[in-house]
Length: 138
Image (cartoon, rainbow, N blue to C red):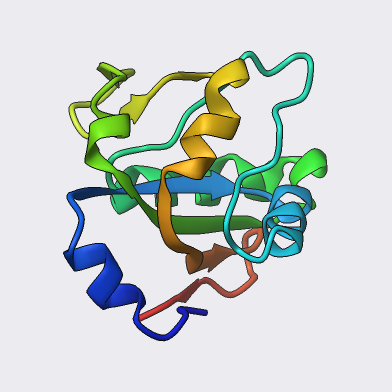
């Protein structure tokens, strides 16, 4: 899913790698953006919260999305790079265990946050309900 030259572009800028667990509907909207942006938040979602590590994103995708009808009973872990200067505007929030770290981006700031994404958003893991296969990208 990477465009040619993505790695070189990312390495020439100071970026931070973040992760976002999503369900099927959100993944479909990301795909419609050309793998370049996260969709606007719904009215009951005042915060966009990318997470700081793949382990935490996998826990959410596996333990929450696969049990949620609104997620289509599937969880995907996306990985993306954002300009470090933009990511640094948001304090790291620890919301449970030490590795449960995320950024809280107010929904009205999501368009600007999307503009700071460098390269495409990638799917790095897929989780299905118990008995379904988990797929981890290399």
